[in-house]
Image (cartoon, rainbow, N blue to C red; front, side, top):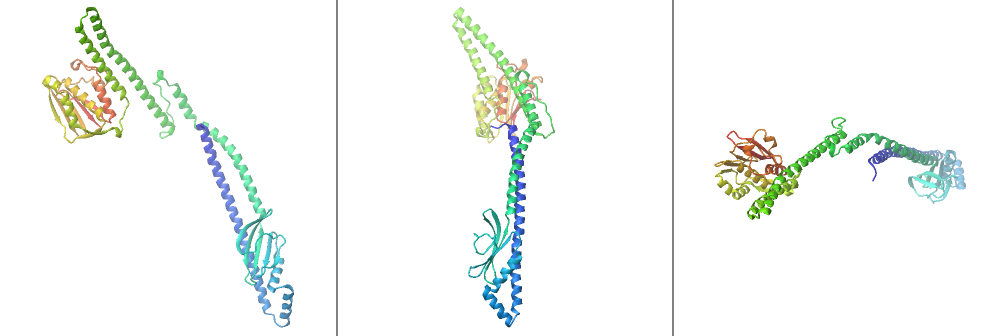
Length: 456
């Protein structure tokens, strides 16, 4: 695989050489057309001149009478047709350098031919054609002569012009070869300067490691410059990596801290059972194990859907009224124990496109959160309007200082809202909602309690 620098040099060379070849080809083509046109015009001119000359002589001779006519006829009988004789005389008088004539009478007998005329050329009538014989090139025209019925052929030697074209081609190939080498070297050197910003970005990127993720690449160039955009995109990527690493560190720290408590309690309980042989303590050990299972399950859910965004193939129509009723039926006994009433204002035909399993978990966690922070004889309200799902309780509300951290992993509010749990329910709800293209917000209600909103 060629390096980027080499590919730039090769592309630059190919482009310039192609342009040079195109220009040279155009020059050669139009020069060839030009001199061919001039030579063809000369051939037609000579044809016209021959016919005009012979016609003029014929008119003059037709005016002669008496003995002169008889003498002319005798001469014609001795030397062949009078017209043929006049043509022969005209050819001898009109011969010029590199222009040759050949004439056949109506019977196909050769009457006249210049010594240099190409002998292998047929006597058939034709438009101007290019013809080669030996090392010579000719432009030849063959035309029926109206006066005698014979065929007149005129050939112009264009060998010198053909040689010039061949020489031009040879010089052109040499120029292309030399220019290709020069342009490639120049392009290879030029690409070094073009790629200098990329090399700088590469060198800076290699120096950014886990130990110094806060460092960023320098952003240079005009606003719409591609190199500037690349630097900005890489800086955004480093920022996301930094956030992920910090989140992972915090997550590991919090997880180890949360697991330490049930493990220590389980260890204490098992030691007590071992010393006292009191198997009634086994139940307490099972409760601690259940807590650890719930914590690990929550951690796995968060890890599984970290940075996930569901596509349309994973989504389906989600009937809100039906699904919320299912959830309420499942946890209805808990509501009854605390005498909490529930109020639902969700239209029966309300649907949204989501990944059903994850979004069901979002609703479950928010409803359970509302249940936990509603006091006895409280009330939980669930509504859906203008594509926004709202779940509210009438508890004590949330401390203003806690709101920015409410969806953080393992975060628990002030003492007035502290209950059993690991502080992962809202974090899971937020992550699952975002994976479906929704966001969660929270506010304190004037009438008391908190209201969570899930919307696009």
